[in-house]
Image 1: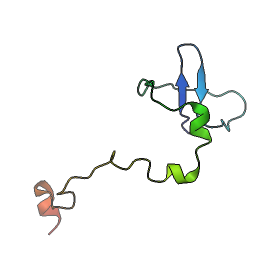
Image 2 (image 1 turned 90 degrees about the horizontal axis):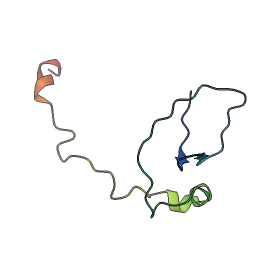
Image 3 (image 1 turned 180 degrees about the vertical axis):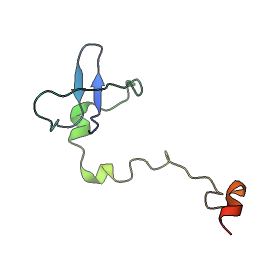
Image 4 (image 1 turned 90 degrees about the vertical axis):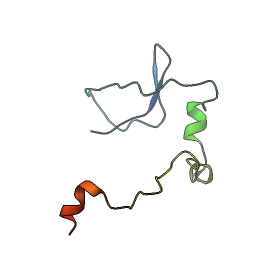
Length: 79
């Protein structure tokens, strides 16, 4: 089992990467989020140079300040 990202335009699914599976396969389609007008095209996504991909999530991922702080509910197990 593996996942494939695609764009659905109401009629067709356009994969964002090559599909490596051959023959018939059962598929599960989950609609993640609508594509906005400022989203890049499939062709632009596939042809992006590695230098653009590295760091592309900067500012979109965060971690709580107390991420490594002990959890009170688990204190008895950590002693």
